[in-house]
Image (cartoon, rainbow, N blue to C red; front, side, top):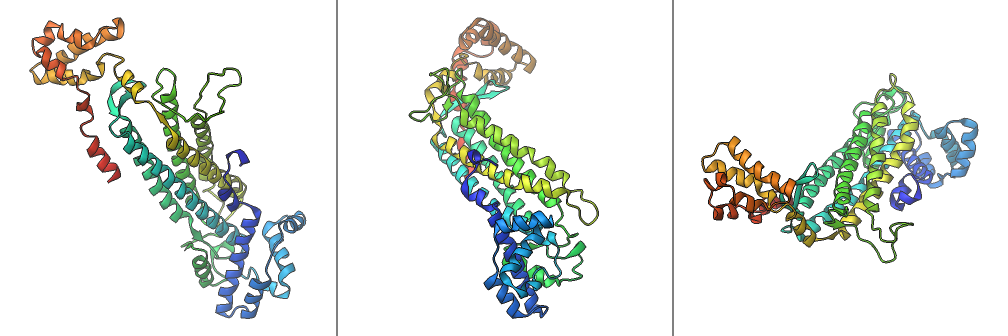
Length: 430
């Protein structure tokens, strides 16, 4: 993670200071539980809370000798606590601390991401309502298809991100687990009560069965969920990039006073924010495969997953946090051009109504094959010769033999295509 694409609240979760603070809380809560069980003196648990502290630089110094981060941490805490520090880490193993800490960090990161998604959903809903009845061109394969409304476009993204939010909530539940089960996960040297106690204090659920580590299928699902959210971000960003193309120009990113688009061409106004979101989405998706490969650890535990997670956990959450907030700003300030949408709708002189003409011919008794032939024959004149579709249809004797010119003209009704927008909006927004 680099400052350019980082936001301070999310970054704070992943600092060494934050990590070691969580480690200390886990160890101290475990001591409280052990004291309640009578395994260690209550006075020792109290002393650990009162005197316990750590120094990041000192931990780094110790680790240069021990080559073990948890031992370095415990050694440093003992320098503050004194003799009662011998009761720290009773019956625990390093993974109890590392895995449960990661669960806490990912849970806290998820809470920030959920707030991000709430902001994006609010922006999408506001803009969708504003443009609910603004007609625009629907496209398939990038080619004019049939009319929609711009609000309907945004409603599809609202529904998608609403699904993403539900997935993220499920991923949060899946990742928020605590394991304080000792070596190979058997609780041989620590009572399961300690795990239950620490889990409750840290806002986590108990891992039903750990193997010295929390099973990594949970983490794979978590990062896969982030990858799906990133893909949805890219889909919306790509739509905006296409809409801003000079040939289309139906919507445009806000261009602030003093902003420059090119070092060489002063006229340029580029969709740089949407392009940025597209690139960030690719990074987040890139973390999914390593998370999945982490699932297959050796026997009860190895640490091949450790180096991966030390990188992808902060990077994926920080990057997605930034991308979601950037996307929210894009949507919130998006400049929309209804007049240009109308121009584009009329660009092909009514070709977008071809299906309705086709269906009207079938209703008038013409076979579907012949109806298609008649409509396509006249449509190709528009593509190839720049003719007017309505004029060509009404001048085609085979067509007018079944549909009067006035009836054909009635088929060129934009409102026909938007008559169910209210129904769709009720489904999406309630």
